[in-house]
Each structure stands twice: as structure tokens, then as C-alpha cells.
Image (cartoon, rainbow, N blue to C red):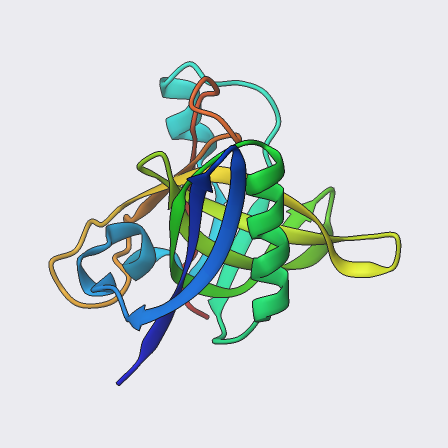
Length: 179
């Protein structure tokens, strides 16, 4: 039986306590974002323009799944980050792996998890800080649109990526064809 990690935070007597609980894997087959996330995505300039969205976005993103890409001790650190922010959340982990963000022609790779925060699908990725490869975490809201009734990626799938919070617009990305 496949197990998934869930970060559980509980508030007791003004202190946030964190505990990892192994539970049966969530049914990711019904999680649209988890089922289409893997692949290479490029900014969809035409759709963003038609939606009235300007600004800068990474030129391309790629997600590849890899079980264990983010070790348990890193998840515990994320748990501490949430506790320090005063948040009491149960955070399911639907997928993990490596995220490559390309900016100005330069690719940068980061371990990531796909989760939900306040009901929004969220990618949390980790960057090096002070020699610790998982020393800093960043996140963004991500939503996927499946365009095929078949299993696997559809040629017109779209990924919408926002900021950390729900007050930032989501920008459109389109899937690049497999090469």
C-alpha cells in the first residue's frame, strides 16, 4: 500500500505543535492539478494578453515527479515555518519532485511539493540559504485545466500560476509537446 505524508499542525495552549502522520495515499487521480502538473510549460502570451495580464513571468517551467525528492526533515522544517507564521493547518502532499524555472535563458532547479493551503492548490519549492539546500521555501498558487478526456496530457492543457496569496493574478502557461 502506498503511503502519503500529511503535515498536521494542532493548536494547544497557545503553542503550535507539529506532527507527521502517515496515511493511505490521497486519491490523486481525482486531483486535476496533480494529474496534469508533470511536464514542461511555457508562458501563454496570447492568452495572458487576452486576459489583460502583463508583467513578468518565468519563460518556462517544468515539473517532474520523484518520490522522496523532499526529505521528511525538510517537511518538518516547512512545518516549523507554518507554525512560526501562526498557522494551524493540515497540509496534504499530493506530489513531490523537481521544479525547473527558466528565467532569462537560465534554468534553476528546486525540489517541490504539491499541496493545498486554504483550499488552493499550492506548489512549495525549496531554495538554498546559508549553505542549506532546503533553507528557504517559496510557494505559488497553481491551477490546472485538463483539455482531454484521455489519460495523460492533453495538447491544450493550461496551467495557471499566481503568487503566494490569492490577491495576485494567475498567469497562463501552455504545455509544450513531448519531444
